[in-house]
Image (cartoon, rainbow, N blue to C red; front, side, top):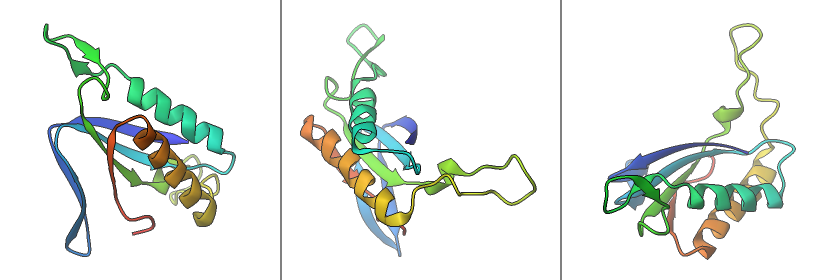
Amino acid sequence: MRACVQRVSSASVTVDQQVVGRIDRGLVVLLGVGQADTQEDARQLADKITSLRIFEDDAGKMNRSIIEASGSMLVVSQFTLFGDCRKGRRPSFTQAAPPEVADALYQAFVASVGAQGVRVETGVFRA
């Protein structure tokens, strides 16, 4: 799995001119699922991201996790994180998991984050 994580003061995702996910202070996670990824990978990545100490404490130091900061997470599927541009001018996505596998692992990641007490919003898979 590959994730691009960004701390935000607010974020939303819109599909067909309709907001499908919105958070205030928290993290936006663009999540790509690879062919070799497993349920355990989804759980471990969820644990890692929810434990990252990237929110300020009272002293202004980045010393709090999203859980400690009472933040939310917006998770958006992004198969292009597995794009390979080493050859030619057209990216290859052969390392990305097939949609049915990727969707199941995407949902497993979201469930694992939610099980840790983080409010999770999502985009629409394959939108």
